[in-house]
Length: 398
Image (tube, rainbow, N blue to C red; front, side, top):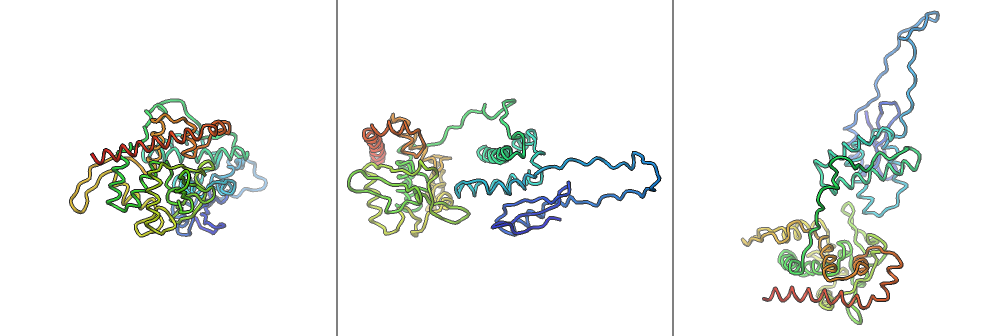
């Protein structure tokens, strides 16, 4: 039988393996979760048959010669994982993602298997099966995590090679046509914001406009506070703080923390029209955060996406009988960030401007070069954004 026990801050499932020693499946956040998994495991410890009695003077025959001892199976995947968690240093969001993928995919398949028992062909068959039930991006994330865990096992000397290998034979997915990321032009952004205004509030409509015209991520926008908005005197700008510039939502809990990467801590200059809209919004309410739910609380991505974003872009039927046709099916909120990058490409802005704007890392030499022409390029960027805004306003008024 399998049993559960507390292990540090989490719970783990213990069970008897076929080779004798007890195995372990760690990483469960609660005892009920551990017990649920324990119920799926079989007890492989079975009684061994008793050999018949043999007289001391009886000759040995092949039937009574003890079989050679098998070599030990080595460290199990679950046992290595238990150690591996203590070796990684990643952000809270990444850690939560790793634990979810591990619990739902890696442990059910590999938890009871020794590291040395994982073969490339087994991994390939498993990944192929995952593609039949999961999105390509999910399968890629699962495969990459398994590769990372086993690569560290190689460095630890527990494996000689990593069984998660790149395959260049057969019908590889690299031959599939690349899927273009969905983005919106300035007119579509304004139309989406107009629908969000009807579904939610002027505040959340401005959230959509700010996302499209700055390229900020959801967490950076949801965590944006008054003190990080410099909207008057000189160049209007928003500041993404390196230690608290993003609002993270992990397992339902909201906390402040660093943005996605060190390069994401940045200053974002604003066109005059957007600075004015933000200033008016901050004068309208007294909340600490710029963008909030209708009742003034923290924004939650899942709630906004389900109640507001999805019907705005995919279409819906309103209670008054109005039918909204799909406006930009499949566009995600993160797609507004892709839109901002596409706009910069269309407007002929160099890669270094795009990287600095979006918080992507570039070489120090490139940053030094950019510093000499930053003012001129920034003016070009803001002028292009203002022109887009004016076009969208004119089209709406026409």
